[in-house]
Image 1 (tube, rainbow, N blue to C red):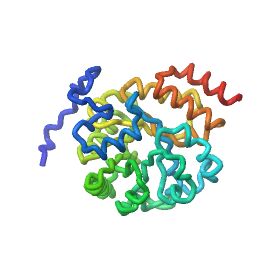
Image 2: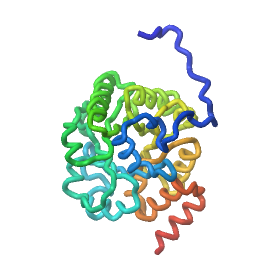
Image 3: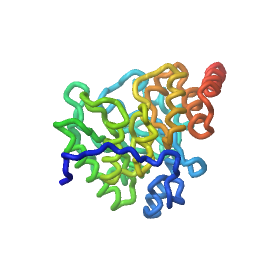
Image 4: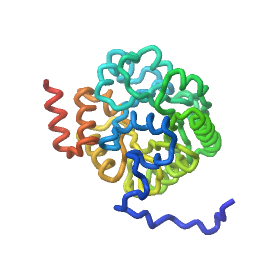
Length: 291
């Protein structure tokens, strides 16, 4: 066990220095098998190394929340603009046309809902992920939750064990503990723990000092959109995250709860893949919204 009496906060993050020895377009994937690289290449555009993931897995704990009452009416029309879809197996089987041919990041753990204490989750069977031909599995990691931290870390490394066997990458999704401060120290800790336990992608939140979170994480970091923001603020969030090293975004409410969801996801796509500045992205949003 590490000596906890002399913990020193990291301070040499090599900011501005590119990761060495990685010729593959996905960070940390240089030495992975062909099948893993193929699936990651479906998620992360080989030309930019980035991704726009559309998250609509919220219903597995929230039910028919605003914007997700009718997946066929609100989400299906957005699919063509996303690089990857993040959803549950129930919605995938019942609502998402297989002909869309989009990579799927499957929510692969479930347990409690908003009616009880969250984070008491178990994993789905890896065989179901294989049957669904998913490109990645998403598993929540609750660092700082005394009751469920160890269980969620165990879920993650079991998912990695099984995913590695069948060539399916795993995305570690960092939950925010009720008593945790939303800062670079916390998100850096949670992201690094996810990667250290084998996650191939980390989903976390943007924060001050985000470039340190990214620099210290040996796999791609995508940001969560979080709560609904005004469109301009959401686009600024995307731009800052990408500018500070994020490999993409995994947005839900800031897209499907937007006043013009199709326009919003296209504006986000332009920020992520074309480095469009927020003010120009907002112009694009307004132009598309008014068509």
